[in-house]
Length: 235
Image 1 (spheres, rainbow, N blue to C red):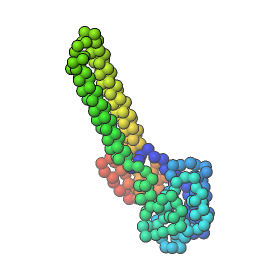
Image 2 (cartoon, rainbow, N blue to C red):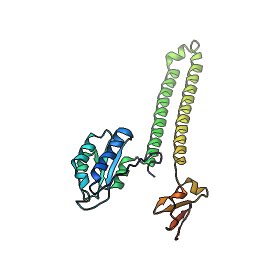
Image 3 (cartoon, rainbow, N blue to C red):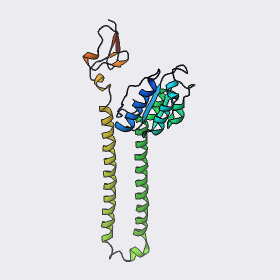
Image 4 (cartoon, helix red, strand yellow):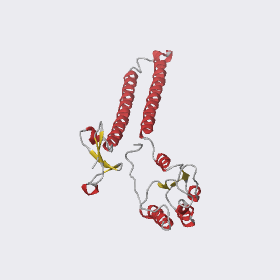
């Protein structure tokens, strides 16, 4: 929802038990060396000190330190701390907060783009007003009036420059508007709920979208989701 154009890559790793530390090291190395990404999140839900111990292992800490990708550590809940939290580039109180830190908010980006467009409009308008006033002062000056016959063609040139400035400003705004519309269209194409608004139905089990028939468990309850309502169906 925050940034629909983002791609999320997952790698299996146990988060507790004797196999957890080696698997965490393997997953960190995979994204650092073989699958470059912009940012990595390492984390799990809350648990006892023993459950969270793999994130205190030296091998995991060294893998985090050597990782070439920025890492957000989100181990446990807000009251939990691990060595991974101090070695990582940033710490999140929960895995949910880690996702918020990792992804920008598309609505904030839109507001920022609108603000830039307004500032650009004001800057160009101010510049045009300043030049217009300067030109008007030149036209009304005594020296210019004295040689009006010799410089009468300047008026047409000034008018032409003003029209060109107006045209360039118009084209500049049109280009920015087209760019913003293109970004908006790309975001809409990535909206997973768009098909639901067109009458399609999404099937979910255990809160997950069932995209293929082989992923559907006929023995478990499922939910049919429309654009305006969702119905729970029990088997």
